[in-house]
Length: 304
Image (cartoon, rainbow, N blue to C red; front, side, top):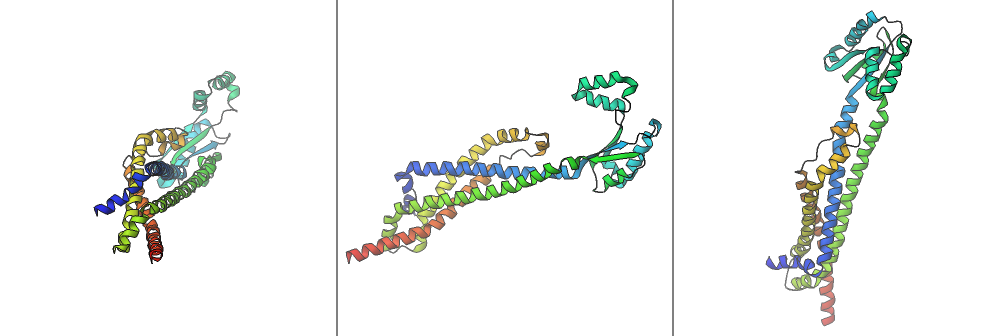
């Protein structure tokens, strides 16, 4: 067993930089794959909130008197049925509308106030309904007496929902592609290492070594590179995970619901590096066997 361990470390002695650079590349690709996985998983609660929660703006008809505004609010609340307790229904009159406008556009709010009574036809009156609503809630609100028109925030976010859904699929494809690239790269490295092991494995075959035994050095070599890459990924994930998530969540208020990356996910990246290295070494083990067999056969025929 000690001999097999020494053989597995032989590529590190003869081509240290090649093994180290390969491990660093594995670590970088694992971090990138982990980040993309976090993005596609983190967008799930964002999409769920945008699909379930909405804000319906019900504009009152000009014929509705100020004294009857509360009646319209009560009718809208009644139309929501059992879901009325989970939503916020409030009347937004002219004064409240101007106050809300003034938070972002103070000059515009001042101009409207200066118009006095002439501004009354320009200022909309509406009922704001915010919360988790049924798909038919918008139609019921529109059918309420005194409501001239109603619109939902879901209609405004329809393109955003489609873009986020497409982004999740793109992230999944990229994660799969990165996994395939990692496996392919490590298989190529293991094939290269197989030629370093070829003489030793050919000698082991001549001494009666079995097929499974000949695969062990290649498997251990691939596993060592994969695990070292996994360690690089763990350190990178712990040090850069919070930094990346902070900047991504700051891109838009819609992304604030994305969860904070879990440092424990670094253990998954480490395990993924080890598994990919193990699989790559196992696949390349067949190359070790065939090359050692060919080397031994050619050598035998030459001596004969």
